[in-house]
Figure 1 (cartoon, rainbow, N blue to C red):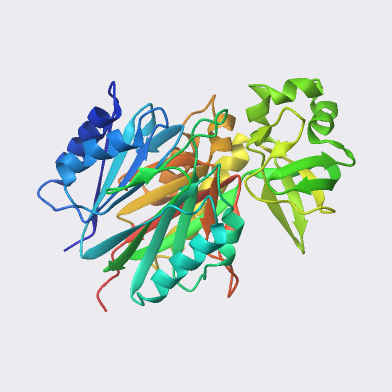
Figure 2: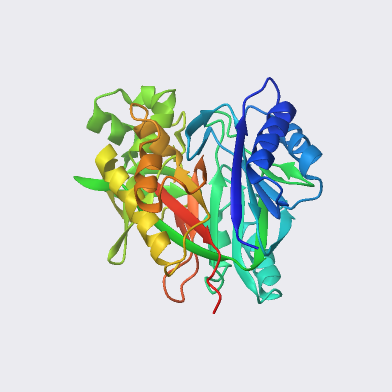
Length: 386
């Protein structure tokens, strides 16, 4: 049985109807094949349980995981306010996990997931979505191993209220982690890159507490950005600047590498609300992105994913992109999709979401990495018979 994927998408007045129509669309595209797994991307404005009820009314007990996103997309472009359903068919089995304690303990959730993966030695890929506003994804990564191929994302939603959600067929909510463990005749290639580069401005992190980066060079973070960009510090605490700060992340020195860390928003006291801690005393650089660099990064990620498939043709690709890309590419919506299609081909079904963080395997024996500002391409293929 060849690996096959089908995508459906739909807008409606409520989440249940949108989920049902998107699933009906995907099933029509799948033909007579039976779906083995589903991935759902839904606008945060819909109720998660309504979306899942619509999807499962047609899929029954098919394993399912999903996340909220401000905008979802497919190989046909962006689909604002639409539910997207991707269905996979082939000689594969999927088992889903619901871990509601992620917001309380990222490390504990990571240990729980690691023990599940350890018990299943034949795992082809672990795919997971966690809350992007609540929970420590750095701690989650530190408890996991990169021995098993894995890819994940932090769900996004309403940047003002901090509302997002995660989904499985049986349970939905926020503050959780939803995972799918895939086994069988499946090969996954993972590639990632970003289009942000240093522009010369250099700072020292002088006060950071948990997820809040409070001062840069001894001044509130918003004052530092006010001096750089010319807008008064008090305006950075309100939309649109409080959210557009995501476009201007910090590159944190970590050994000989630069780690990208981006604010979710600017708080009323001028501090930056991050979703990964930044240590006191760290050297930081202002990073700025542009469309050309992002298009090259999208191609690079797709090429890296393709190379990992060792010549096998992808049957489907899941694209996990930082929400900053959606902001940056407003005037050229879907530019990253076209760049990926230049590498994978226009005939490969795609489904994608804008996220608040991306998780990829670590290099060599190191734990998985939490990324900001990146694009991650997860290409699925059927291995050639030996």
